[in-house]
Length: 159
Image 1 (cartoon, rainbow, N blue to C red):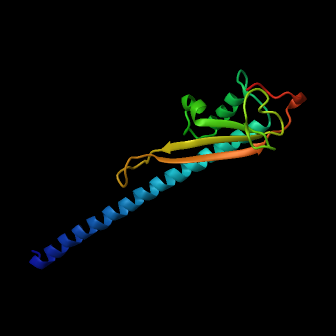
Image 2 (image 1 turned 120 degrees about the vertical axis):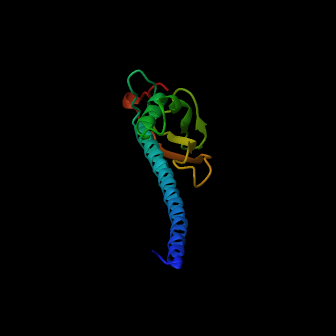
Image 3 (image 1 turned 135 degrees about the horizontal axis):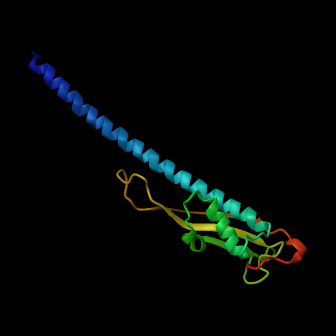
């Protein structure tokens, strides 16, 4: 039979351990969420860079225009964060005149020498484990820019 004061110590140790375990799990879940957001932003940034690299070559995918091809390249490289349905609304492609830095629209805006900016603006990532913090999404934006190369035979592809 155990003395009365030994049972009390054992119970106190269990209570103290539960406080430490709760704090450690909270910290673990917070680190998992932080890692998830960093992974998501790095993945989207990589996808946008790949879209920009594709854009400057004036290539198009079969049956698609230049803008749709760029958006699809970004979607393919986004590690599943951007769905096919989201690609056209989330991925933005803009062309600028390098001399005036004014945005250029319409046919020929993707001509050689112009600047291209591929962007994903206000992208939302939900936390994996919303126990530690609220389930509100974390928003971020990423962009990549480069100068368009001259198109083959001097004719830029259809937008």
